[in-house]
Amino acid sequence: MKHATLSAIALVLAMAPVACAQGASAFTPQAAPVAGHPNSIQPETTIQLSAESRVNRAPDIAFITAGVTQERATAGEAMAAQSAAMNGVFEALRASGVADRDMQTSGLSLSPRYDYIETPGRDGRIRGEQRLAGYVASNQVTVRVRDLANLGETLDRMVASGGNTISGISFAIDDDKPLRNEARANAMKEAIAKAELYASAAGLRVGRIVTIREGYEASPQPMPMARMAMAEAMDMSTPVAGGEVGITANVSVLFELVR
Image (cartoon, rainbow, N blue to C red; front, side, top):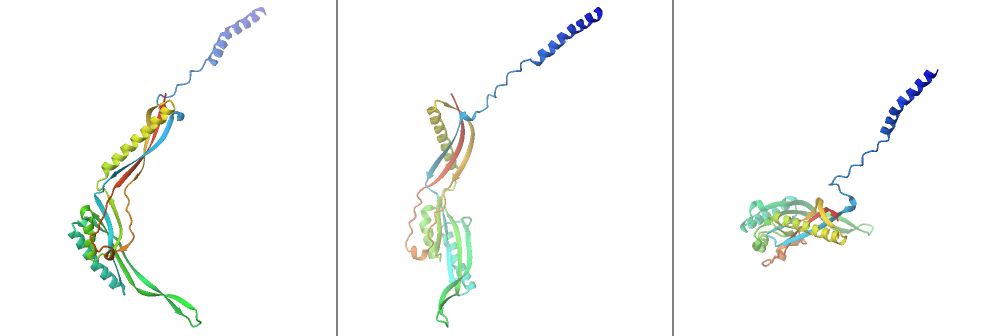
C-alpha cells in the first residue's frame, strides 16, 4: 500500500511541470498593436477647400445666328421666297471673307399662320375662329466670323442681300486651351493660399495634398439679342463691341494639416 501511495505522489509531481508550462503558455502577453501606416490620414487633421479663378481676354472670333423669314399665301411660295433670299445671304457672307466651313444651318422651319377672326352669330353673340392667313418659312444660319474688324460690315452685307432676322450673337476665343490652363493654375494657387491661411490660424502647417478634384469650368456663353428686323434696324454701318470674354475654373483640394 505504501508503495502504491508513493507511486501516485510521484505521478502527480511529474505532471505538475507540464501543467505549469501549459498555464504559462495560456497567459503569455500579446504583442503590442501595430502602429498605423505612416501615410495614414486622420480626418481631424485634414481640411477640404475649394477655389475659383476667372481669366478674361479680348475675343478673337464672333458667332452670329441670323437668316431669313418670309411669309406667303402658300407653303411652296414661302419656301421659295426664303430659299432665294437665303442664297443671297450665303453669297454675301462669302464676299465678306467667311469660309464655307464657318457657315452652318442652325434652323429651318415652315409653319402656318392663322388670323383670329371675330364674327357675330345668329344669336347675336360674338364668336372667334381661326382662319389660315398664310405660311411662314424661316431659315437660320450660324456664322463664325474670324475677322472681328469686319463684323459690322458682314452684318450689313447680310441685310442688303435679303437677311432680315438676327437671333443671337456671341464672342469667344478660338483657341482657349491656354486660357483654361491659366485659370486652372490660378485656382490651384488660390486653394493652397487658403489652406496655408487656415493652417496658420490654427497653429498648424500644410503637410501635403491628399486629393485634387477639378470642378466645373465655365466658358463664354452666347449673348442673346431680341429678334429684330435687320432691314429696319441696320440702315447704317453697324457698330459692334466685343468687350471681353472669360474662362472660369474651379478646383477642390483636400489638405493634410500637421504640427
